[in-house]
Length: 237
Image 1: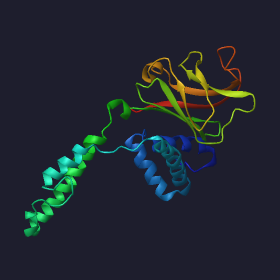
Image 2 (image 1 turned 45 degrees about the horizontal axis):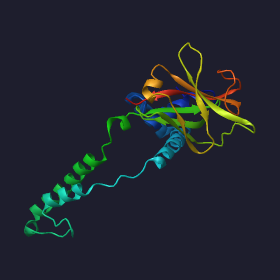
Image 3 (image 1 turned 135 degrees about the horizontal axis):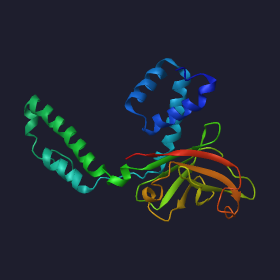
């Protein structure tokens, strides 16, 4: 399939978004990577979506390793944990032991980083929704850990509801009527509170959507203005 054809732009954008989010099946990822090496349009789409998704990393705080990690590495390598100097540099007498010490250091660091950087299971299992318009260009990205009682929304374009209007977020059940999740506050990164943990609240919800409503939200309990953005919920668990 020629994904660079103009009439297949929406499909290419969706595949590129799934590729960047890491939700594509391995076979699809391999095929897209192969196509991108010879098709500049596909390569550009993958790069653009990777750039858009990368902005989420800006919201993730850094993690400082606890002191016990360095102490464990130092003890294993015979170093002074306070100065980092060799307490007993016996391995330096023979090149073989020097190489073994370096290999041990690399292995210890890898194991230690894995130990302290491993987050609890829910943090590894987020829900991600790329809300895009009819042009398939992402406008907002919604994320939540399974136990979160809020959705975090990050604006990736200059999307604005207009004067005297506000965006409202909707859950779209399969074959059911839309259910309001609340109005979306203004700002680049905002939170929409949920009445239950995200994985329960959205258990049977395949899609989210955003409509334009009067300030305060829809007066009818259903979307009254145009639905500008929508996206499927990707569950990474």
